Structure formats: structure tokens, C-alpha cells
Length: 111
Image 1 (cartoon, rainbow, N blue to C red):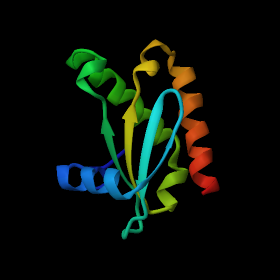
Image 2: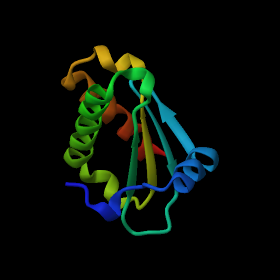
Image 3: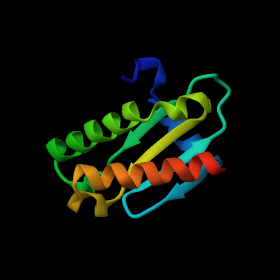
Image 4: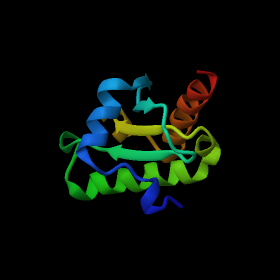
């Protein structure tokens, strides 16, 4: 479960991570990451308004939070992450989303 202190909330932090950080991407997600100063990782989730109404966006945010909680391996790295959902992800099942997310995590671990 993500705790409040593990969440990137401020717009200043979001823009800093996106502007100065590196990124990895695939058909469903774009993950921006920045080497953090903390010993724990922080996450920010963004689902654009073009992807659907509030109910749809919140559904996908919950799914992304579930994927993060299932994959605790990134907590060891101590980086800050911004996870953006792409429009292609709306047509995928949760299992396909999970595969795409795990593939990106493997790319991040290699870097």
C-alpha cells in the first residue's frame, strides 16, 4: 500500500521530474524517473482528461496503484517516478497492463 509520504503531489515536483528526469516508455505507459535524494521511492500518477471521464480516470489510477503495490522492487532504488497512462492502455485488460508495467520495470532495473 502506498503511503501519503510516498506520493509526489506538488506540481513543482511533477514538472521537475518530467523536465530533468529520464524516461522509459512502451505502448501503455511513460515513466519519468529522477534519482531521488531519499531512501524510499516516491510515485506520481497522471491520467489525462482526454482518456475519459473522472470515473474512468480514477479506475485506471487505482489499477496503477495496485500495480505499484504488487511490485515493491522499485522501493529499494529511492528514485522519484511519474507514471503517465497512454490512450492505448484503455483497450487492454488488467493482465496486459500488468505485463506492460512489468516490462517497463525490468527496463528501469537494467538502467
